[in-house]
Image 1 (cartoon, rainbow, N blue to C red):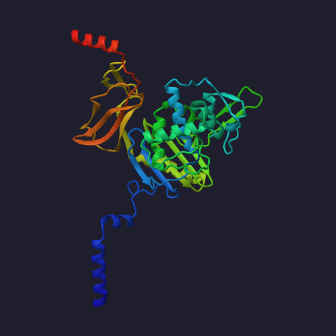
Image 2: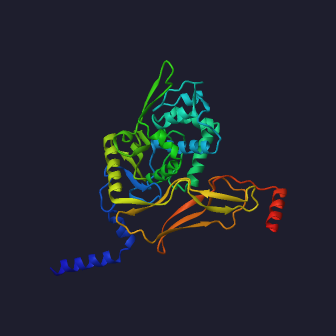
Image 3: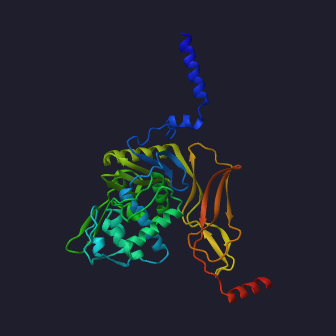
Length: 391
């Protein structure tokens, strides 16, 4: 009996001496309030779309093949090009032999066939067209290789640590990977372009509608039909990646993003994402800070062709709160770069909108330049100086 007591005492002493980090590795990480969400997924994350607050995550930083969820980044670059006026929805996109040769999911583009940007977006968002993705990549960058460079550049801008692209469509390739966390961040970025859900939220549509061979599109994301409030975003499947989905749903102006990777089948994938949505909508709500289109403030641009930029909310700003949380002492402040000088690029971070509860920071939103500003010529600067002197 003395030997047993001595052994127990020694074991307790060893455990007490172990570093906390080692002990933490052995302990299971709790889910959302102990909820067992996405048990069949290889990795998963549940995020508030407006604030980026994470509600639940499971192995969310693991590098995994994203399959066709890759097209979220492809669509981001397409939407940015539309916003900047580099392309229009009515522009024709020609299909190269290379684009037409893509296998897997496709809209069966023929070499030389032309479709509008609008129809190509439908083909990407609904049918997950690999051929349409490459055709758009070539339209925007000349070659898919150059487009992939832009994809990786954008991923770096978004701070994605576990993402690297090798193609525009997600077909299996070496050194092509992402993570559930990074996909959620990408999805959040895509949703800043509110028009995208007009495509990702469609359940069905047609291409070549007035031709002899109309092509029926049915959304690969069945949640847009069967889950109330769901309107996107992108499915993915390869034998290596298994069944993946980045999904979004909105109720009462509260938008959620759920990502699952490595699910065993579509039924399980859809059921687990639906459960994640149910949990978020039952447990949380959001508090609006600014509405889309609401003026935030102004910022001076030193030596710019435009002296001052008006800042307007490009999308709704809100914070995530547990239902029942008191909101009386929540406030926000705009903090802008004090020494902003031209040239300034559209989308360039120029400050932060910080939300406080009392003295505690709840969240921070990046504030971006609403337009590009070139350096002003000497004559413009001279006139501006004279005006300021006399006023």
